[in-house]
Image (cartoon, rainbow, N blue to C red; front, side, top):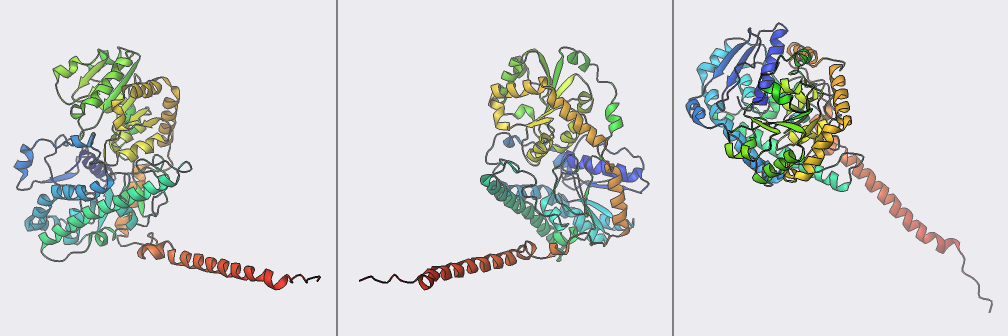
Length: 507
C-alpha cells in the first residue's frame, strides 16, 4: 500500500480477474497508512488480507506525506540527483514493512497453505517476487504506469530512444542533435535510478531472509508476460514484443462514465453561473495550497483576466485570507467529484498534473486538457496526450507567467479544435479492436497455463550491448571501408606519376 494510483490499478485488476471467474485474494502490506481505499475493490468475492506491520501506529500518526519541493525545485528535477537520491528515499519507505514480512514465518506459511496457482506482483516494489520465490509459485509482474524501462528490457523491448520524448526534447522529425543528446543523457540516468532502487531492495531482502536469493532480474524475467498500464491507442508507438501486455484502460468503464449519476447539489448553481467552466486539480500527492506564491499569483492573474469563465479549483485547505484574494468566478473545494464533473458538458477544460489516472479519465471523457506535469511519469503522460491534439503540455514554471497562462487557457476554451481532437481520441479509445480487459485476461490465463514460456522474448536479449546492436560487426565494416578508401587514395596519388610522361625539352 504505497501510492493511490498504484493501489487503484491493482484493485481494478483484481476486480477484472474475479469478474472472469477466478478465485482472487488481494494481499496488502502497508508501507504507509493509506486512506480512502475501502471502496476500490468492487467484487464481493475477493478476499482482502491487510498486513499491518508493527510500526503501523507510527504510520497512522504521521501526516499524509506530500512533496511540495517538486513544485519549483530545479534540483529535485535534475536527472543526476534523482538517480542517486530518489532510489534510497523510496527504498527506505519500503524497507521496514518488507523486512518484517519476509521474517514473518507464520504469515508466509498461511499464504503457502492456500496453494495459490500464481502471484501477480507490481514491479514498483519488489518484495512480492521474493515472497513468490519463498512460496514456490510463479510470479507475473505488472506495472501501474505506462512503462518501466528496466523491466521492459527484460521482456525484449528495444530501447525507446527516439520513440517517445524526454523532458526538453523534441520528437522526430523535428528533433535535432541536441534533442538526441538530451534523450541519451536523461535515458541513461533513468536506468541508473531504476537499477539502484531495485538493487537496494535486493540487498535488504537478502539480509532479511538470511541467505543468498536470486537477483531481482532473474525473478522478474521468469514470467512469460509483463503487464503494463499502457494503451497502444493512447501511448506512443513503440517497438515491443508479444511478452509485454498492454492493459491500459481496464480502470475505465465507458458505460459508467456516460451515466455517472447526479452531481452533488452544490455544483449545479456553480456550473450554471457562466457558459464555460474549467476544473483544476493537481491530484492527491501534490497539494495546491503548497504551491509557491509566484505560481499562485500567476494563476490569480489568469482568473482575473478571464471573468467570463467559472473556475472550480481543488484546493485542500480552508484558507480565508487566500479566498479573499480570488475573484468571484473562482470556487475552492477541498474535494471534487472529478468523473462527474468531466462528464458534464458545461466543463470545457480540465487543468491537471498529468498523473496517469487523471490522464486516462480525461482521455476517456473526450475533454480538452491543460497538462501541467510536476514530477515522475507526469511529463511523459502530458506529452502522450498532447500529441493527439486535444491537450497542451504546459511547463509548471510558466505558471508564474499569468499573461501566458491566460492566453493558453483562453485559446483552449474558445478554439473548437481542442474539443474536436479530444472527441476523436475518445472515439478511437471507444472502438479499439481489442478490449483492454479482454486483452488482460487472455494473456493472464495464457501465462497461468504456460508459466515457464519464454519463447516470446528475443534470444538476442540475452547478449551484451555490443552483440545486441552488432557494434563489433559495424565497427569492423567501418574499419575495412576506411582502410579501403585509404589504400585507394595512396594508389591514386601514385598513378599520375606513372602514366603521365615527362615533357621532352626542345633545346
